[in-house]
Image (cartoon, rainbow, N blue to C red; front, side):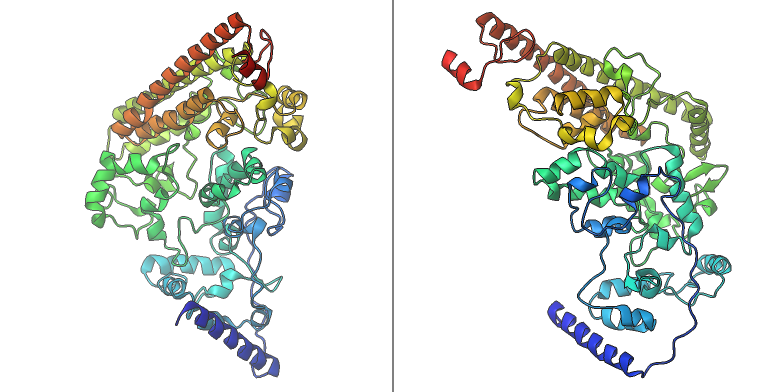
Length: 563
């Protein structure tokens, strides 16, 4: 049966059943079902947060503080369902919902979404006593929700019993039965960004997102959406409709998002000695067991992503993946080195990015102890401590190189030498004309807000973290080649070296990390010399094509006439 025929069958079936229901040939309604409490995944966030991330508006406006300036892509209904989901209009499901005809979901969808139905029939939702471990978990859940579970079907997850409409489940719906796991995931916010629960924030709170919409480039941002849409949902790891814990314990469950130029976790783990042993011996790993029950060496010869990052110390594992994060993905500068560039002033009063990290704070030293405890399952504590110290030394070195490059560009900006065209021919910082209006001095800080407000958005922004725009956006003559080289240096190559070090993959640490970082530093140095040399020649010739306080600004036409 082709897809069109399946749809016609479903629609005709819908009409038939509707007629039957209205004719009264159904059993009387059962007692009102128990409605368990849900976890509010945005509880504890700032007051403004729910209004821009949680409140459902469908596809009328975006999310985040720039919500009024872009319309979301349609697929955001599925990536951010609390904010953007719109129920289907092709069929009115109200009558099914009111009569609680759970059986009709499967009868219709088994003819259309055969893969989804087949996955569900393999799941613990379909058979909540399919194994001893699952049966015990089901018994615990039954005690929490106060009723016996025969199965968890489409109706339980996809029906909003209050509105009598179809919903796209979020982690809040999962929390009706799995409250502890969802609370653990939400607790990631207590450790600061980046984390999973705030991933959507990191996607749409940046100014280049609405700028992409304004320029007609938003479709290309779907790649960002597909990963950053993990925050509200559980199915990026426990993929629908099997929702298998065993699947989510495998390293591959992490790899579709944790890979690529700025965070090559998949590449560095897969090619490390840990990853190679896992690939050769994965059939011996017992992924059915909860992590806390795994016998190290016998059932896991090497660690997985989950075994390392879900470990909380003292033999405990939870759904908080970031509680031991010290370097926070490597984008935030440490406070433990002396800076010569404007990085000494980071975060420049901006409240929506993190402060510098003190690697030796009591909190981070406690996290280091947990890493050493974890690594000591197989290595000596001395080995683990020395390796982590060496990782820190690499990051200090990498940020020192970052500081060196930023100082070069700082000086070009101070001397008004950076931009190679007249000021009116150079674009603003992404959405720079609206930033002061949307964010205000309370979020941008007085100095940054004042600079944007006075210049109308023509503010040079470089380095961690707002300088990352250079890899997401290209305006007219902005960012320049030297700024793009610098952005690659700190956002790609520094982070690739960090991930190579963190996952013990030496080739990625050097050839993907430090080596190209040094090459880009060379490009920054050479480009700065070229800019200064050309500026000196132009000044001597009196043509002043480079604009700045020491030069006479000319138009392109005047320069061509001089030549």
